[in-house]
Length: 119
Image (cartoon, rainbow, N blue to C red):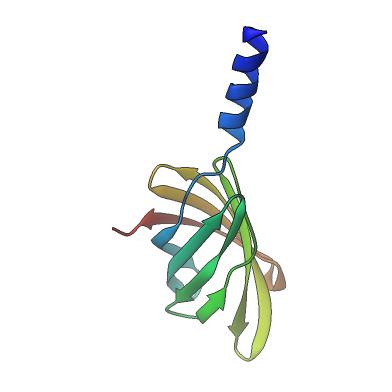
């Protein structure tokens, strides 16, 4: 019985969502130059909401956001020269850093971004 309780406790611990609530800032190199992006994340259980602002694309709401353990994913909609497009973010959380892989399906581009928590 003790073994089962320990196993259940371990599973509950590993399945919990990291709390990345707060302000973050990241940069990514693109063919059009460096994109700086700030994030304001709000976590409620496994649900991620908030907004993000970029020096190139302005403000976007975080959609379909999820945090599962140290994995985070969400979608934003950006306006590129008058055309709206979806951008998919998938990241790994490690303390006060998130390593993102960013997919821009409209242009067939994948980027990497490192975001750090802003005190």
